[in-house]
Every structure is written in structure tokens, then in C-alpha cells.
Amino acid sequence: MAELEQRGDRTPIPAAWEYASAPESREIVKLEERYGLFIGGEFVEPRSGEHYKTLDPSSEEPLAEIPQAGPEDVALAVGTARKAFSDGWSAASPAERAKYLFRIARILQERSREFAVLESLNGGKPIRESRDVDVPLAAAHFFYYAGWADKLEYAFPHRRQQPLGVAGQIIPWNFPLLMLAWKIAPALAAGNTVVLKPAETTPLSALLFCDVLRQAELPPGVVNIVTGDGATGAALVKSEVDKIAFTGSTEVGKAIQRELAGTGKKLTLELGGKAANIIFDDCALDQAVEGIVNGIYFNQGHVCCAGSRLLVQESIYEPLLEKLKRRLTTLRVGDPLDKNTDVGAINSRQQLDKIEELVAAGEEEGAEIYQPPCRLPEKGYWFAPTVFTNVAQSYRIAQEEIFGPVLSVLTFRTPDEAVEKANNTPYGLSAGVWTEKGSRILWMAQRLEAGVIWANTYNRFDPASPFGGYKESGFGREGGLHGLEPYLDFREDSADVIGG
Ligand code: NAI
Ligand code: MG
Image (cartoon, rainbow, N blue to C red):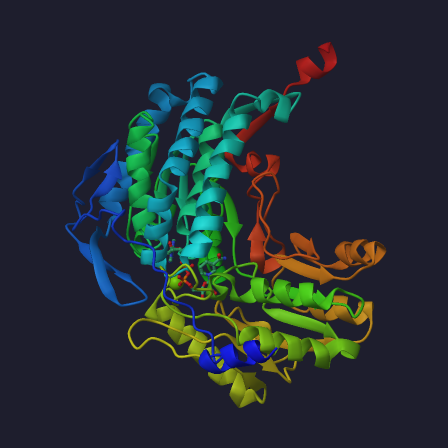
């Protein structure tokens, strides 16, 4: 005993345990100074002649120059995709299509570290997430749809399916590679060709993906990547594509729907959300706290299905908030490439401005703000994990999608009240329910207006499970069998049905 005390004197316990920094090396990623548009299997100079710089949002350091494709470039890409469609891809045997999808999946796995580093570098998300979530799930999507490519007749029995032609796909910046996989994998499995436009702030993983396509020896023109901002996206919507698949803001989604009305082009929209994460008093509290944190601070809250409205049953409000606040003090905010980082950089100046504006509105309207003490880097775009209490349903922070690490806490007494509050939103993408009672989970799931409902977990994804929304969160499903349908035309095969 005396000996122990003595030793204790010699090595005093430090007041705070600090993590050593554990940065992932950037060396594995080789960036070009300037990229071209990927059309017909090669990088070409944009006819528009315009480029812009893409940044590392954690340092504001420019990473590369990216083409701003104009309408002429988009038309070239769509024409090339059309030619690839009729020159062989649509008639290729389904097993052949599957082969390419398998190859792409394998190469993504082989190059996963490179993709993870690049995704964090260009997007600001923690390497732990890009390494453990974004990249493995992207590969999983290609594996999954590779499996369906030669089984479409079993997927949709008694219905004769045909590919649509050229799919125009517009994706956002919050999961650049994963959204690319969600879009490209089912489109190719169904026999379409593709023109994809990545978001302006995060084009690099899509451009690296072009190299994967070349390695996989995918026939030229089957997948084309055109970079640029909203104007490029608008040009793609107006172009001669057969279908648009869009993930992004509700505002742009509505504009696209107006533009396409009456054209006969197919459309799927995956838009915003304001999900309720509902905590009943019989749940496992510590587990729920982890689920709340994962629900709203994962990817800095840049998640359409983020659990941004916490609905807590009144009887556990105080202990839950105490546990949640304590947990927030342990979140590490900082360098996205550090393996210990939990919360990385905000994706862009524009997004940071939006978060700051909504948080200011929350304070003005009378909500109470809590942020754990944390030192934010001086350069780059950062926002501390934030919790608002004393929130009324009418406040902007309870109504509008913030798309940042900001949680609004509301309370309820009865399951009916929880349902009413949860559904009191123009959105309907996702929801979470935390309770020990299975019957209550089912009761809630029947009443919640949301495309995805998680029970005693949150933000879990699987390529076999369809994802998509109701109301202003859009329509159409991605993932699973449902995710193939928007890429196929069906003719009922009556002879087959009658003749047996
Ligand atoms: P956005 O909807 O403007 O951008 C998403 C994609 O659409 C990007 O590739 C963009 O270049 C393209 N785009 C923009 N205008 C277009 C147009 N007129 N026609 C065709 N394509 C167009 O989203 P933004 O401005 O980056 O973010 C604003 C808000 O939208 C966010 O704060 C968030 O609330 C929400 N959002 C939701 C996402 C989701 O996953 N559902 C993803 C990104 C943003
Ligand atoms: Mg926008």
C-alpha cells in the first residue's frame, strides 16, 4: 500500500488525458493539378473553357482545378452515353454487365484507403467515417446490384423489363462517393448508360472513380462524369436524357420537377428531411444517447435523414439531457484526417453560413443553446456540436433543415403526442424510435410518415434496404429491389401470365 502511494507521488495523474494526434497520410492520394470531363472513357477539355478550384474545407487550401461544364459539354456527354447505349451496352448479356459491376466493387475495395483519404480531404468528413462507412457501403452497393444484373426476370416475374436509355444523375456533397454508387450501380445493372454530375464542392472522388472505370475496362461512354455547379445540373436536366435521378435540396428538386413536367422523362427525387428521433422512457438510456449522437453529429449533421429533432418523453428529459451533454464533451472536433476525430469540417462556406444563420434564429426565437467546450481550428469551416433546448415546434430550428451538427430538443408525454409532433413537418424521410417494447415500435412505425424508420438504432444503411421519402422529402426509392424499378420500363407480359 505504502509502495503504491509512493509510486503515485512520483507519477501524478494528469488533469486531462489528451489523445496524441493520429493523422492518416495524404501520400496515398495523387491529385492532378487540373482535371478534364470524363466523356467517352477519357478526360477531355471542357468546351466551355471554364474551370474553378475545389478546396479542402478544413484548411481552405485549393486542391485542384475542376471543369465547369457548359450545355455543349453536357450535350456531348449525353450523346456519348446514348451511343454507348445503342452500340452494345443495352444488348450486352446481363452476366456481362454484372461482371463489370463486380469488378468496380472489387477495385473500390482494393483502393479503399485512397478513396477514404480523398473523400475526407475534399469533403471534410472524419476519416473514421469515410473509411468505415462511405467507402465500404459504396463497394457494397456495386456488389449488391451486380447480383441483380442477370436476375432481373426473377426480380420482376411476368413483367418484361427494358432499360430506359440514358440516365442523368445529379448528386450532393454530403456523401459524394456513396451517392455516386447509389446512382450508378442500379442504373448499370438495369442496362442503362449514365451521365453523372457530382456536387461542385466535392468532385474529386467521382473523378478518381473514372480511373476505377478504366481499370475495370468498362466500355467507353457507359459512364460519363461532368463536373460543374447548379448551372451544369440544370443543363443536364434540360438535355436529351431519359431519366433524372436527383439527390439534394427540396428547392432544386421542385425546380427539376417543374422543368420535367410533361416531358415524359422519368424522375426520382431524394430531398431534405427533418427527422424525429423519439426516445421513450423505457429505453436503454445510454444506448439511446449513442444513437442520438450518431443521429445528428455523424458527418457533421450533413445527412438528409439526420435525427435533427429529438423528441424526449418528459419523464426522462432531465437524466437524458444530462447524459447527452456529458457525452458531447467527449466528442473530438478537428482534422478530418485524424483517426480520432468524431466531427470534421463543415463542407463549405455557404453551408456554414446557413448553419450560423439558423442557429442565430434559434437563439433569437428564445431557445437555449448548449455547446461543449471545444477549440475550433482557425482556418477552414467549423461548427461546434450544438444542442438547443426550450424549443417550440414553430421555431425555424424545429421546422427547417439545418444540415449541420445542431440538435433541437422537444418533449412529449404520450405516444400519440410523439406521433403528432414527429409528423408535424413538411418532410418525411426518416425517424427513430427508442423503446424496449416491440409492440410500441410497430405501433409507432405504422403511424410515422417517414420512408425509413429505425428502431433502437439510427443511420444504419444496407444496399438491400430501400431508402427514400414522403411529402417534401421526395419520391422514388434507392437501394434494394425498389431501387431497380426507376431504371426500368415495364411491359406486362400477358402471354407469359396466361400461357404459364
Ligand atoms: P443543391 O440542391 O443546390 O445541390 C445538390 C446538387 O444539385 C449539386 O450537385 C448541385 O450542383 C445541383 N444543382 C444545384 N442547382 C441545380 C439546378 N437548378 N438544377 C440541377 N441541379 C442543380 O443543395 P446545396 O445548395 O448544396 O445545399 C442547400 C441545402 O440543401 C442544404 O443546406 C441542405 O439542407 C439541402 N441538401 C440536402 C441534401 C440531401 O441529401 N437530401 C444534399 C445536399 C443539400
Ligand atoms: Mg443550391
